[in-house]
Amino acid sequence: MEKHELNDFNKELDKVFDVENPIVKKSIKIIEETEKKNEIKKLKIVSWCAATISFIGILLNTYKIILCWPVWCVANIFWIYWAIKKKEGAQIVLWIVFTLANLYGWYMWFIT
Image 1 (cartoon, rainbow, N blue to C red):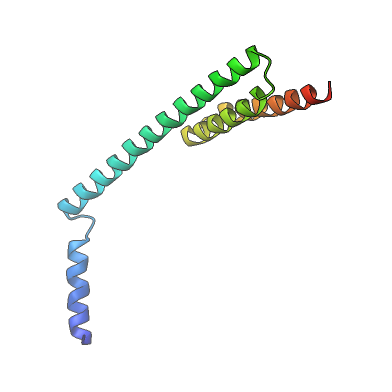
Image 2 (image 1 turned 45 degrees about the vertical axis):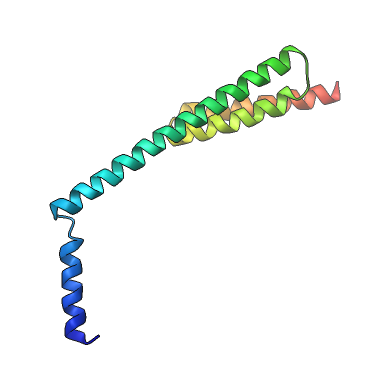
């Protein structure tokens, strides 16, 4: 490809991908909306997984099964991820503290 052809090609590309172009603007908006919807769906799945695993941890604890501690730690990891994605600083700290408390409880169960 010669230099002038390459320049013409670049000019055509600039026209097609011009952010001020209404078609490009609309396409970008649709992509952003789709990404946002997908993120919301993913966070719903994460929160349902976290809630279900937490419930299993409660059941295990009710029957005094030591597996409740690692199950709760896994649930807390899901909750921490959820809180980070939602940008909830207080929730992040809360779930980290719960995780540390679960690890301490698990440790105490072993030594007593």
